[in-house]
Image (tube, rainbow, N blue to C red):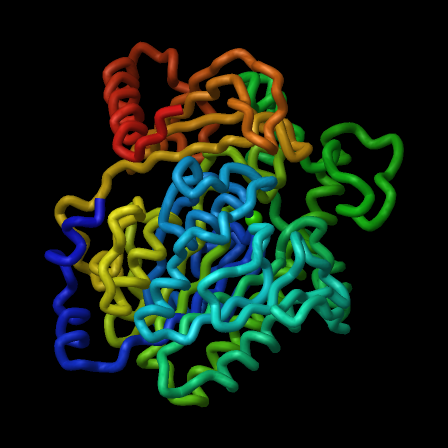
Length: 478
Ligand code: CA
């Protein structure tokens, strides 16, 4: 998959490498469950993210960056290994990243980088390939969180997002300046249960957050997989999510209307702290004079439903959740305020960083470097379709049905194959197989399944062919 990347090396990048310039630093900031439609650079209707937007204003906004399995642990596995779940063994929330596995951190360290990771890890085993790690155990806590290092566990007082900012800055300040750095600064926020910093506790309290157009969608018009899913804003929230008891006697409509405001305000408050801490890191790079030679990425392990289809959470191969925000700044290589609709995946991140570091992508990685795309020179043979698979059948308390599918620039085909295949986080209960197909041009909100529509018969067949071609290509044979 990665064969053409070297040949298509962007001229700017090639020139920088020829001149024996120092390898770029890589600051990779990843939050948890931050949907791109809650970032103002992506046109958010619900909030402003001025610091995250600085990366977009001074770099590129990727409009079609997708998770290959839209849930926390598997997406992290894919980022680190450049492989799909069926190759790296991280299928569900319950899987461990094999500590013997080579990751992008090992490869960058071998290439002379000082490597560090701070914040959410969520892969059960200890981080490998990092010179420094200071991570949350499991999901971690928002307030007075415990962190784990090689020296053991330590509780820190304060708000988790700010502490992750502090530790990230400490790594940068204490770094070995003779080496380039690779820092993964991973926020826990804005993951459920959306507990804000005390300083933003009352922010937004007198405002109404705009509702999405399909907040009250009638799910009985959709297939079994949608009807089965317990992601409903209102019904499927508990008191930890809402922090207050549910009002009694409300209709489903009114309960949703009320719960949406409670949920979104806390979600956006959490994001405000993330945005502040992105700003602190960018300010440090400016003050240190290393902005020009530092690649800065802001992304999230997947997207999130913000009341879309009446839902919260992720997992589905629908637009709002499979889409990852991906903003990247590298002044030497990427034009300010540029955008790309090229389809890039979380398995491409590792190959991209390796190319910037002057390293080859190992054969076992399944992604491809998109450094040329970032430079505005998308290779002629760049992918026009992507493969997705969610494995955690009915698991994790949200009863989302396992599925795989293909997305092109214009259409999406999803197959809910109806069983858990023995994966640890799955429930061993078969469901009827089901297909969905969406016309993303006419129906970007994915409201109408056109799978059985005769007008789409030819498109359906070509998508099916493409789906199984990709499945073979990635060797997902189970
Ligand atoms: Ca997540």
